[in-house]
Amino acid sequence: MKVIFGKPYKTYSRSLGRIGADGVLSLIQRVDDEGKPEHERRWSIRQVGRGHYSGSMSEASGPIDIQEVDGRYHFRFKMTGHMSVDEWLMPMDGGRSAHTELTVRKFGLTVARGEAVIRKLG
View 1 (tube, rainbow, N blue to C red):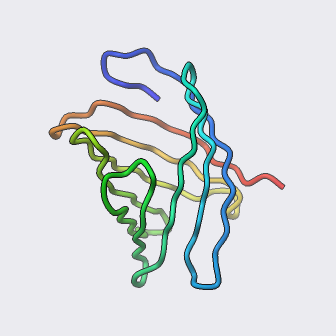
View 2: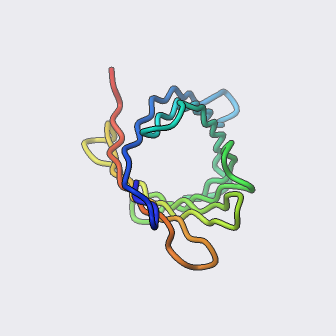
View 3: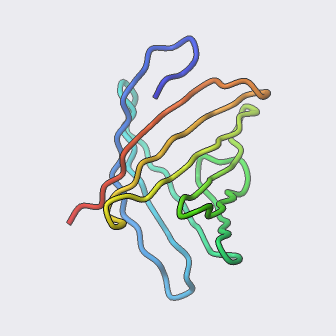
């Protein structure tokens, strides 16, 4: 992760998720940002239309909006401090991994960028 005026840092997470009988994806992430205490992030996502998903995330200040675009997933949401997040999740390797690119903006200016690879273990 690279934050404007800051030193880049690594971030890792371990996630456990399941899709309930109601079709809702519940995901708990244990997040380890380099140099900071580990913390938990919770997601709850449901399909609301063809290729359209909505939900919540513990660090978001409002709803999460997700659109499927040509097999990729475009996440948009707001965070406290007048920040907006724009993230693309691109599945790879038969669905066992994905590449993600994240941009955080404040008042329209890019203040952070990050890239990651997500892997399904086991």
